[in-house]
View 1: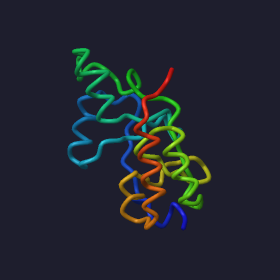
View 2 (view 1 turned 60 degrees about the vertical axis):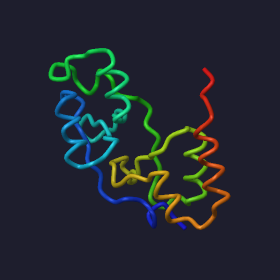
View 3 (view 1 turned 30 degrees about the horizontal axis):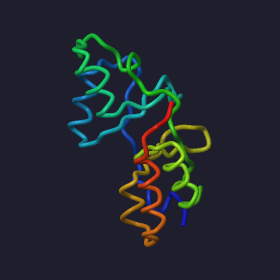
View 4 (view 1 turned 60 degrees about the horizontal axis):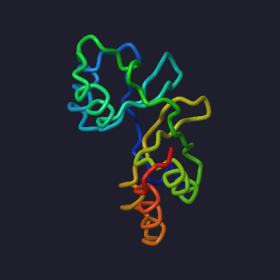
Length: 141
């Protein structure tokens, strides 16, 4: 099975110059917790609901004046639609993420693959359990 078979197609994205309040409103409207951060056609990183809370709200940042680029998580984890689900499972575990941006051959986002997609669509409970265990381990810096 390939990523294409289980991913959520389409992806909302945000420009790096967007203010945090507008990005948060977009997340609320679309009921999503992750936005790829774009500079033109290039993905700079991802903005998560957790990024907003930890890096902006908890720091009492002015959400109207602060740009997404100021708090973006760089080095986004990406995967291609034709990659295998086994490869995706390894990516979730290796990078300890719950969502991966699916990109086409030009690195433009075309969808999102979530841990939930994997859990719902894959019948291999052992694989899903292993991935969940790996992403739940504390990171060692």
